[in-house]
Length: 312
Image 1: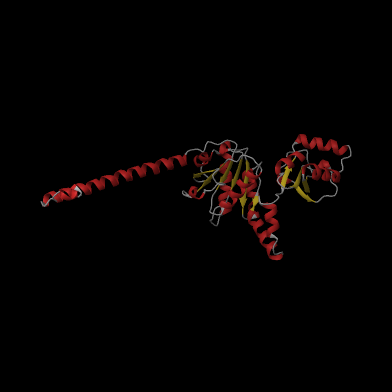
Image 2 (image 1 turned 45 degrees about the vertical axis):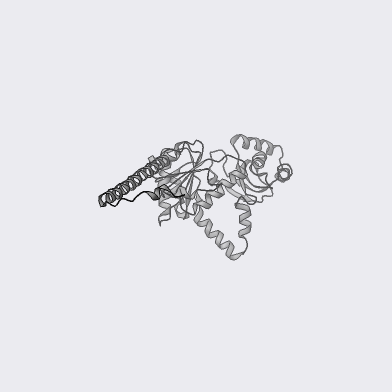
């Protein structure tokens, strides 16, 4: 048996060969052109989808993105997962291809949008006006705190009442950030905290394992609970009836598996207070309930936030 194609006589005419080659090349060029157009259309559709609003409500917004932000996002998602709470978040950053880094089971809940955190139209891409809380991260340049404060001003224009968490490198910029953000602005000083952390590890080697247990989802986190006006009024009534703080600590441990490690104390509780206005009192023996707006506590095992809230 022989393939009939091999029995066909090849064209010997040069014109026929030239025309055949030209048609083949033209077909290849046409096919490449069609593939290129299809690729451009797909890329355009993907870019347009990334510029559309994420369509979230009551979510968390992170403004600013660097490669180191991956650790923060993973830790945030893991804490919500461990507490069995739904997590919805959107990230706005200057890196157009950063969305390719948000892969893995923990990072799938983040919706990335490319944009400038100081532009109002870019803030709309992450539905900032409907957000519950906003975390503002600094950039990699030298004026990181300046970019954070600018983003704080832009955020307040779009959402005056959102809980705002600016991350600053230098404590000298705290007053400027607080003035820009106003009420419901909770300052985070990662620069100074990193310095304290390095000093502790230098002086007390191995202490990083303690911090990992306290600050990461791998161990028992420290939780804070600030009383509402109704809860604080009920606590005052109990205090007037002879509430013993030490008895309260024992009850919290026995009934909820919560170890109270400190209190928030305030000189004035008759006005609206920010968390930054409160002083931290560690391991109090006795406390005046009228001056206690909240707790600091460590839950045991996987009891976590429901236990803290139930105790509060």
